[in-house]
Length: 396
Image (cartoon, rainbow, N blue to C red):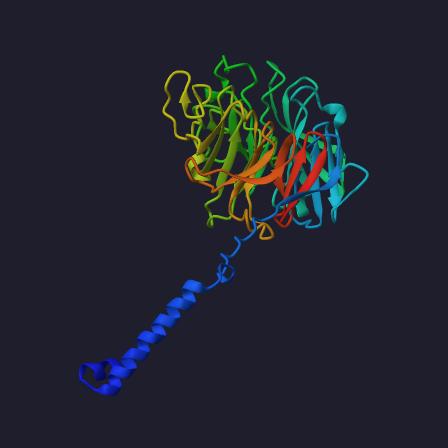
């Protein structure tokens, strides 16, 4: 209004015009003479989430941790010596759930590696253990539980035995169920560079991912799905080939219905550790490359490769990768939906966005020496086992 009056030649308009300039001048003085201490400080950045590991229990040499379907208060821990222990409501029960230490060869890398429970475990009572026997061969045996916290040792039934006597290393050793089918990963036999090509030979069960239904059917100790890819051109149990030592791996079932994904770590030779994250239907019949490839590096004759690793970790700062799972525990918001892993030589827990090729690797600030396995509890909680025997729970 005052400015329009000035244009119209109104005297009062000229007065308002002068007052406006005076107010602007006073405002400028106030701004210019305002003490520096009165400037609003920048807000502090939000603190980084604080992750910590809490020791839950101690064992001889813990190597695997699992829940069991139908038993939400129990957690099962495999000791490499040949014992499986159980925790009830977070407290270790004094007597082992299963003790077959007298049947297990425990030397160098050999020992008992894992336990697996089928979906119907609460009703069927049957479960499976993977271990190295006294001869040095890989054994997959079935047992049945007597009570919720005690197995019946005399129910042992051998499902599968794989000859492994060339060396005392590279046993693979992890098993997981997807539905009623059991997936089993084996190492290449342990000789440097796999000189006999066992990992690439579909007629040999070393260096493979196997898929079987371990339930006895008639006289057969197990059956194989008709869709297994090497039926008629190799061992029917073979699901994928070309592994060096797939020591630890897991399934991620939270992506979409019917789209289970495999998150697999394969221990490298002298250049790279590798992680592959693929839909399970893309793993069927895939060749993971060893010994012709280490990571993505061609070190032998070229192959038609169907499964290059999602990302690799170089030596010497890494030496034996230990996976790992995609974290689904909502009490760990900073890790939710990320793939968590470690390395036997690099003791920091690290994480990536699963499925991204060469993703940004983020440290957690949490360190733990000689991690042997990362696993989930009954409610998705994240646990770590160590070669020194500790069982730890990750929290935030």
